[in-house]
Length: 632
Image (cartoon, rainbow, N blue to C red; front, side, top):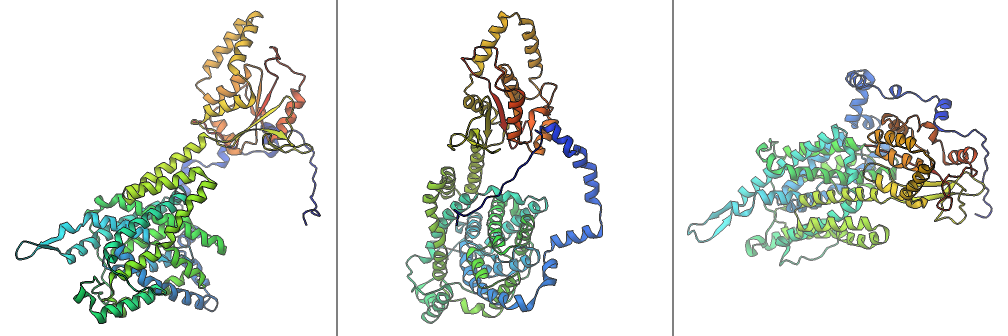
């Protein structure tokens, strides 16, 4: 098949284009024509028109866009089946993850109900299932146990010899703490979404998130040992059957009264009325709320984009941040704790045929029926059963330890990020571990910019293409021309490294060559002219240090510097930075590598040699390929 493949050909004949000539041909617009003034932008943002109002309402309430187009015949049954399947999963997961949050199980059911309904109106993903999630439940549990430990609710018996925990008072305060943390975290997410801060999730790389969830799974295991220790429940095929069997055994054997086995306890019928969280707790939980907001959003947007790419629709990252924030903020008023999508439930929703957010409404109805009518059936359910469900759901997270082998083969830096995240999360609290992990990940980004790939390019014979000489055997160096390329953006932190790499790749010892040339000039009685150049060079030194380092140092030894392939934004930045002068003009910038090479060969060909000893170095013309230049 490949042997018979035919390749097309093309032939282009045009003049060599530098930046100045290219701007003349393309009639480049002025900066003021492209970028409006701040006053005009502010005036336009405050101007209200009917189309603009409609777009704003549609983007803020995505349900108004897709619900009128909803086809009951095409989507109704798949969404109903998917919603029932996910709703059945919500029941065991909601109660089990409430234990991770150190809250009564009924509040896990509330958390599976209200946020899903809020997301229906504001969310843009069609397949994620909003509700309880392992990692967020653990993070909420660390807050509730820190601010409401058992020792603060001890009550003495009549003899003052022993004491016991006032469980009702403790759980009531823990619910207040969880609600306050959830509301504050939701408000943070809404604020970040309104100011278009959805890109913050990109700084949580996949290795960081996977390592964080793996370490959080270990915390979850420790948290559940108090419920499952000493209890060996019979293994069943699934969580729901496990709950039913456990409830029946506990109810008929009276495990709670006869053997003091901890059970779920009273599940009140009906819905609780909303209440305002205790704002006095905000100051104590703001750090935890911010961590919950970031982790929840990172998991939500990663799952949302995965399903969006698979099914061919778009997820708005900023609107997702607002939708998740409102789900948390409103849910907190109904005593819910922090939510985000669950991988297991989302996969079930997608694999069972779910098409739209209607599946989330159907699952919420299953939870609602359970709270109103079926809650009393689960009162005798042993908490050990719920703890075992948590263990089963953590199985996938423990499999993520295999990432170590994968990352060792693919990227050592990502492996270090994984290990640092895991260790910091294990040794520190979940919020401090997240902060340390993000900080380290940002340092790795800076580190990578300090170690880019530098290469010298050669021409592919018979083409206008240029590739790395070290990695391509058929690439040929152009006589008298050295083409230097950097894979990273040039900015103040790596400008010196860039210059050193340029000197090393070119094989030129700039310092020695400048000294040699000046000695020759001294013999030819050019001391006064050299002194004038030195004075001019010193005067320009404050303008742009990188410009002095590259252009002026190489011009001292009669080496010409040209740049090519610069984007329009780079040229604009060079103009604003006063890069161009009488000696360095846009004639030094070319549209492509081939334009720069042809110019060098036609105008400053191999016939031009330096005046100093050619045994030291031959003449070079440098082409600096730069995708972006940053001067600070």
